[in-house]
Length: 98
Image (cartoon, rainbow, N blue to C red; front, side, top):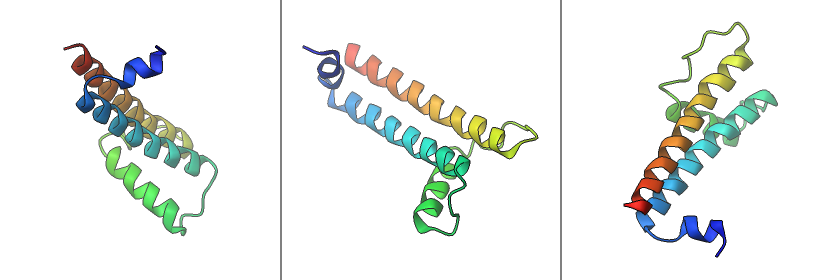
């Protein structure tokens, strides 16, 4: 049995938590990439991703005060993505073991 099959089997609640955490981190990561590539802010998809990422990372989006705007975006939003991944996967792992 592969490790991928082992991590997805078992508790369905753990799998859902892990998937939700992955999707949240993906949305935030997608916004970071769009920001760095200077995506058109007038585009509806870009606006939707930005709004969703800002809502998800509201607690950390202005946490750092670097002089460069790109560094604030990468660190602030990136921290939120890492926290969601870490906490989501930790909870999922705990549910699978317990």
